[in-house]
Structures are given as structure tokens and as C-alpha cells.
Amino acid sequence: MSDTKIHIFDTTLRDGEQVPGCKLNTEQKVEIARELEKLGVDVIEAGFPISSPGDFRSVQAISKAVSEPVITGLSRSVENDIKTAAEALTYAKRPRIHTGIGTSDSHIQYKFRSTREDVLERAVAAVKYAKSFVEDVEFYAEDAGRTDNEYLARVIEAVIKAGATVVNIPDTTGYCLPEEYGAKIRFLMENVKGIHNAIISAHCHNDLGLATANSIAAVQNGARQVECTVNGIGERAGNTSLEEVVMIIRQHAYLQQYHTGINSKMLYPTSLLVRERMGMAVQPNKAIVGSNAFAHSSGIHQDGVIKKRETYEIIDPLDVGVDKSTIVLTARSGRAAVAYRAKNLGYDLTKNELDVVYKLFLDVADVKKEVEDSDLTNIITTEVRTSVAAE
Ligand code: KIV
Ligand code: ZN
Image 1 (cartoon, protein in one colour):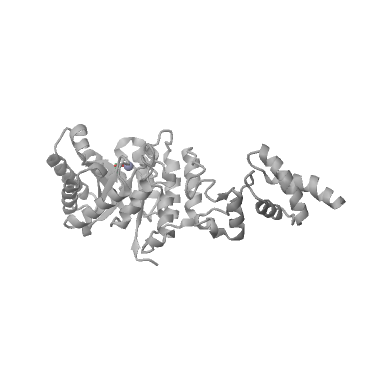
Image 2 (tube, rainbow, N blue to C red):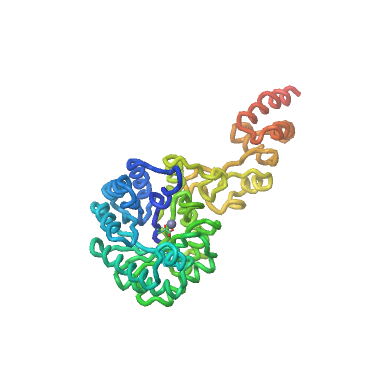
């Protein structure tokens, strides 16, 4: 096994649940948290305890129900938030308080109407206060993606000195390019005194479709924790998708020095549970867990996959908990796909039979978007096997 572990911090139940219409009750959150434990995530962000009594109860219930992963609750750099998070985490076997503050000039000037020095002091005070409740404290520098690197380094150095065990560098607005975000992580690795006393965490949003790419760039530059959600759900365009990060690290030759603790065969079942409970569908072309992720419909691809799956697939579907690849029969399908599907249905067609079936198949395919097994069976049994047999 590769030697560097990348910790998977799942925030489906906090950032993910911020999606309009995705509200879950405590029972559903506990069910998902149990599934995440089976999946093998290292950290579950169970909620934002000060935000509502319901969220407080959910964090508390998850803390009781789940024992393997670290359980964390979000708070602002406000004493009452931090105290409430600590109370909600009382029953957690491995509690972590996740506290922080905006560090970009935009947040400092417009959100807090404050100064860089004041924000730095508030960050340090929050970490110290959180440390009075738990040993494990994660600090987030909100909007770090647009924060000046020199100032960010000062804040991160100060919070590590105050006891932060994990430092989260969110690209809150999903603005950074992978090269830029990777360079930011590298800058912190090289310029923050004491950086080796904490884990750097990547937390990326997907406003420009770059959340996964940015998270991987962070790993390549020193981050050892990635914050993500199942199916990539989250504020606006979503968060980094857990299944994408896990499979990139697992599959890619450039990343073989890293591993995660995720049981990849649970990825698809977990995705199904989250979409079901949140009532949020996944786009068919979503990487790893979309319904078309292992479906082949063009004749050229189908011919290749039938001969050898690896010609057009870089992941074995079984590795992510999907039964098998599918050959979808459409007007773009070739004879090889029709013969293959007929064989799966129990009809080993001769060359003559296939000629007739294929012609009739194209007539149906031009009318229907997708030719079903029942259509193919119908063609074979009513039109071909009888007529060819009769010749
Ligand atoms: O995107 C973000 O900055 C966040 C923080 C609150 C961690 O979700
Ligand atoms: Zn976020």
C-alpha cells in the first residue's frame, strides 16, 4: 500500500444539507452518518449546532450513534457558537470543533467591517476557546481562495500556535484555478512556521466546475485532508465530490503514493441512499455514480468494450459497487452490440439471422430513443427465428 493517507472529511450533512430543499430530519441524518461510517470516511461534519435546535439534536444523535470517525460540528468564531458545538459533541468518542472566520479583504471589509489585525485576533481567540473544550480543533479561513497569501500565512501560523490541529483553506466561492489553489497550499507549506504540527485541509466549491481538480492539486501540494460531499452536493454549484476524489486517488498512476480509507464498493450504494433521502437526483453523466457512467451507446465504443472492457473504461464498475457496464441499444449501435445483447437474452444468432435482426432493429431504433430487451426479443421471436427457420 502507498504510504501517505489522505483523510476524507465528509460534509454531506452540513455543507451538503445547505442545498435548498434537501433538509433531512435527525433520523435520516443518523442513517446517512451510519452509512458514511461503513464507507470509511475519517471525519463526519454532522451539522452546525447553533443554527437550529434540530441541527443541535442531529449532531448529538450522530455523536451517540457513530463511533469510528471523528465527529465535528461547525461554529463561527463566536463564543456561544463554540460552546454550543462543544455541548452537541459531548457524546462523541472523537469530537472535533470546526471554527473559523472570513480572511479575505472582501469578508473583512464588508462582512465584518473590521481590520486584518482584529480578524487575526478573533481567529486565535476562537481556537483557544475551542481548545478549552476539546483537543481536536479545526480552523477554517473562510474565502481563503481569495485571501492574500502573506496574510493567510500569518493567520494560519497564529492559529496553529494557538492549538489548531487541522487548518482548512476553503475556496469558498469556487474561484481558484487548480494551479493557483495548489500554489496557495504550497505557499503555506513553505512559509508557515509550525505547519507540520497541523494537517492542511482542502475545502473547494464547484462554481466553475473545478472543485475536484482543485482538491487534487491541493493534495499534490501538501494537503492531507479533503472536504467533500456524496454526489458533490452543496451550496450553489456544490462541493467537491467524494466519489471523484476517492477514485482519482485510487486509479491514477500519478497519485499512487496516496491512499484513502474508503471502501470504494460502497460508493454507489451510498450515492443512492443520499439521493433518495435528500430527494436530489444525480445527473446521468455524473462521474462515477451517474446512470451513464458505465453505459456505452456508440457502436465503436460498444465493439471495443465487448472485446475488452478496458478499451473504453478506466474503472471496473464492480470497484464502485455498480453491477456491470451496460450496452445501451440505440440507432448508433452496431451489429456487435445487437449480437451481444441477443446472446445475453439466450439467442446465439447466426450471421444470416443477425443480418435480418439488425435491419429490423434499426427500424425500431430510429423511432425509439432506446431499444429495450423486450423489443429485441420481439424482433427475434416473431420476425426472424420463424422466417429464417421457415426458409
Ligand atoms: O465554504 C466554506 O468556506 C465553508 C466554511 C464554513 C468551512 O463551508
Ligand atoms: Zn463550504
